[in-house]
Structures are given as C-alpha cells and as structure tokens.
Length: 320
Image 1: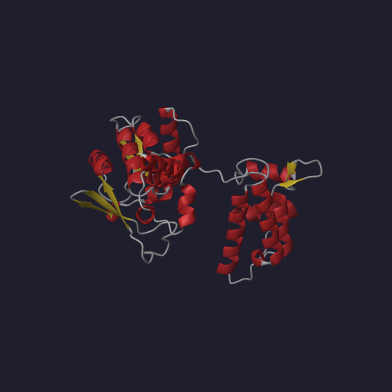
Image 2 (image 1 turned 120 degrees about the vertical axis):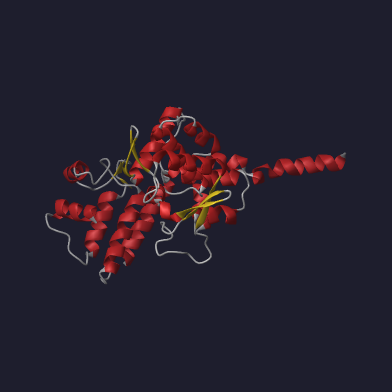
C-alpha cells in the first residue's frame, strides 16, 4: 500500500483516496505493464521522473516495468484492502480483469517466465554444508540449512519465526509444530499435518546449535557476532545466508531462502517420493503450485521420461 500511495502522489500530485477509481487502477496497469510500441520495442508508460523517485525511495528495486507476478500481487493487495474496509473493489471490474488477462497472455507469448530461485537439491545442499565450519556461525548455518530442508522445505519466514516452544524431542530426533505459515494463517488446515519431523543429520545439527548457543526459549535461530548470540533473525537474513554459502561453495545459480523449499520439492520428485507425502511435509495445498517448484532441469530424472526406452527393453526381452 505504501507503493500505491507514493505512486499516486507522484503521478497525480494528490493523496490516494478510497475507494480507488477504475481509471486509477487502469493507469497503474498501463504504467507498470510491459507492452510493445510501434517500433517493436518493449516499454511502459511510467514517467521516468516518477520511476526514478520510486527507486530512490526504495519502493522499486530498479527502473522500468514490473514483472507480471508483481503487478498481480499489487492488484491483489489493493483488492484485499478494499475488502477489509468493506468497500467495492475496482480490481474486480471487467476492464481491469481483461487488461490483466491480455497482458498476461502477451507476457507468455514473449517467453517471459517467473524468476524462480535455483533449487538447493541434495548435491547443492551438501556443497553449502561443506562451507560450514565448527565456529558458532558455522554451527548455526548448518542447523538452519538442514532444518529448512529436512522439515519439508520451509519458507525463509518460517525459519526466521521458528520458536523453541514449538519444538519437542522424540527418540528419532525432533518434531517441529508449524502453527503458522503462508497457507496456515488461521491455524490448522483440515486434512493437513502441522508436525514436521527433523531427523538424522538435521536433528544432530539442531542439537549442536542448541547446545552451543545456549538458546533455551524464544526464537530458535539467532544472529551471531563472534561467540555472542544476538537477536532473532529476519527472513532477509536467512536469504542472505543461503546466498553467502552458495557463493562460498562456488555453485552456479540464483540462490536465496526459497532455494531450500524448491530444493525439497525437486529432490522429492527425483527420489520418487509420493506426491501426497511430499506435500504433507511442505504444507502445499495446491498440486500445481507444488509441481511448479520442481525445477525444469530435473525433468529428465522423471521415470516417465524413460518410458519409451523401457518399452524397447521389454520388446527386446520378449524376442529373447
């Protein structure tokens, strides 16, 4: 909403008022969506000076049009804000929906795809773990990486918010109770399992961290300064740690906090874990969303990809 307010002030010279008009939402879309001009160049209508000021204020990462996913997110937020205020949302109007749909189809035709973080699959995860020494920082990062992956590919926010009160010891290691997440915002979801096991190597790494850090209550993972334990971590700190370890390991790709989640889904597919079991761990509610995390580069590992070869082998055996 800060972005909406600042964009409106810079664009029209007046504060944003509610309910937002249909014309305002359409102008927002025209300003931020990519389109092809008469010269065949991709462009958007956001005035350069407005764009520059939004970037300078830290509200935009870089000049130019926003991604399709970001535009949809901004429209969704505006719609939700209207609903919270019991106001009629302009985002549901046919003109807005048609413009979004048309822009989305054009984006697909141009070959634009969501920018997914590189999956930290088993081999990548091992490389990241190899950079973690026996210092307090290394012990913490090893515990975070293994906890995030082994408990079902936790989001960076879920790792940052992990609390000791939700962790219990079991003979096999630990069980972490995920009470709140992106898909679990009002508590338990019907038919889902909030308990996430942390076993084996991940359990040992977590035990080492608890023993070394002395953490006995509150947030599970904390900042480390030398041999001193600081405050709890932010989700951005988790992402930066994964990036740092990937850089130290020399692995190629665009890594961040979500790499652990994508890595879990991809590795589950590679190892033939039943979809229902993998989704129970990751807490996904949508099969297409879960499958979207499985990296394209791993499709050759799908047993179904070898179906033709298997048919050939059976035919050869029948001849024999």
